[in-house]
Image (tube, rainbow, N blue to C red; front, side, top):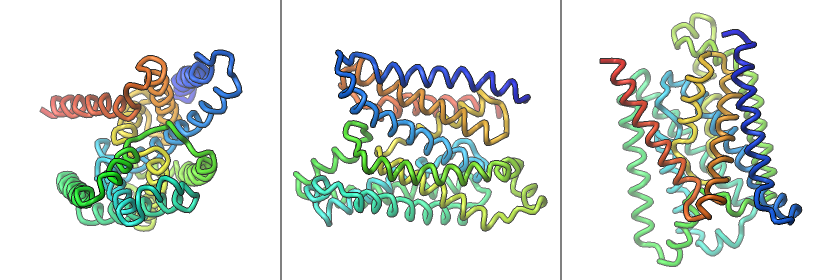
Length: 320
């Protein structure tokens, strides 16, 4: 597709994303501009960071696995996050975890998630190379194992600790720590810049493993580096907001259909703008329309789950 055509597709998304951000920041401020901008501004930055991290990590992971149905979260990383949080609350204590929201605790969550994600993804790809069904089966089994361990610990946990843990496990932008936000901003932007520099390599990898090897790409080292980048982005986004399974899947697959290109620079940009539109628009609906009677994660998981099922049905009809 020509560059001019891609710009024509990108610009409307940019206008819609900017318009939603402006609307979210200014709607129903009741004259308290400074307070509203300070409170909502942090949420907007967090939403943008999560959109960037989810878009880059999912597209990169799907290019690496050569499958548009797979995301890091679908392979059990959400269950891994729940297990990590449960272990911390069980051994450290819920009151301590919530009262000492220190930078070390935040970075510790990111490191644990990133290391666990890297080991899990690397192990799954090594065990189930070029076998989608085996990959999904092992991923689901791993997720079930993590969920079972989490449930066991939650059952024997003090009821008060369990209640505090449940509040931590739901994705929320209600109380974003500004200091944590700066560290998340730095880590996400660093990984995103490095991934963007690899966009041409990802374009080649999109052709397939055999073609990439024939063109001289060292897949072994590239796979480790890409999985590390995906793990860091997934871990940071999850530590910042909480688990959201279908966000990356939705924005990545809508981007493929909307952009109709293999070029990752455009896919990254379009997926990021779609993520911002979904997140900021969804948060606006949650706060202003539903009056906080629901959460953004529930809205995204419900709509994303429907899209996932619809895509499976559509692909099955194409194959038959």
